Amino acid sequence: MSRTVYVNGDYVPEQEAKVSIFDRAFLMADGVYEVTSVLGGKLIDFDGHLARLQRSLDALEIPNPLGRAAWLAIHRRLVAENGIDDGLVYLQVTRGAPGDRDFAYPDPDTTAPTVVLFTQNKPGLADSAQARAGLKVITVEDIRWGRRDIKTVQLLYPSMAKMMAKKAGCDDAWMVEDGFVTEGTSNNAWIASGGKLVTRQRNTDILHGITRAAVMRCAAETGVGVEERPFTVAEAQAAEEAFITSASAFVMPVVAIDGAAVGAGVPGPVTRRLREIYLEEMRANAL
Image (cartoon, rainbow, N blue to C red; front, side, top):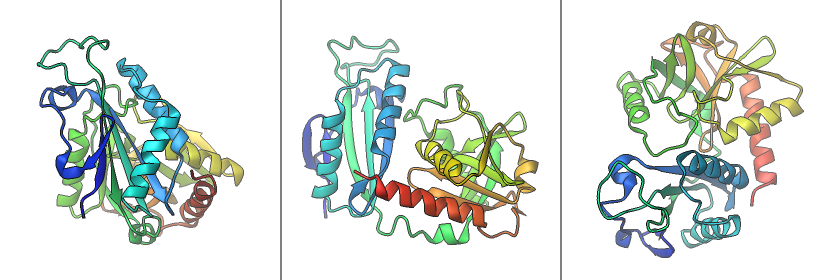
């Protein structure tokens, strides 16, 4: 069954969707994206994703082509037309297609941003076998550029790192810089130790995760302290629990790092409870 996708104001079958070969996302990775989860046909943390989209666009000086009402209407229509109960809505905004290749930004008055959205059907997204078993991760050197806080479409190194993990028989990779964990390939990294959660502070080193922010709120509501600071690989291996957060994985336990078991080597009680609380809160406030 063909999906309906959105391209620059039109809803079209995916086979008919077209973007110019001169689009700057294709030529320069000059664009940003967001991914919003859908549970029970409703959008999870939509406004958080829209706020981060605006932040990313502002950082790259790309005008936001749509307002909140229009973004929400597109998301809802795609969810409905594609029959998504559980899944994802992916959106991408690029600087557009100026008609030729040039390093300099085109004039925004004559080159409109390109806007693309599509859905991915993920039945049982919240009922994940991986959440019950936990992830095994490897660590790799973080050699990405210095503005990881901008959610750009330049995802080559994270893709390479995920493939390194797969070749090692693991599920994902945590990236390490100067001896400290920055983040996962497509997620924020956490540990739980001594009654506290530890995750790297927000700056240009990491993506400012929307799920990360929600989990911090959940932790505060349950009285669990959060310490925002870098942690080493050795500290993570010695922690009682470890987990990741992301829009599509929610709160996902990590049970092994570079072959060393974390805690008992199974998802721990803090991670399991945070996942439950997060999903309850998100479902209650979904749009």
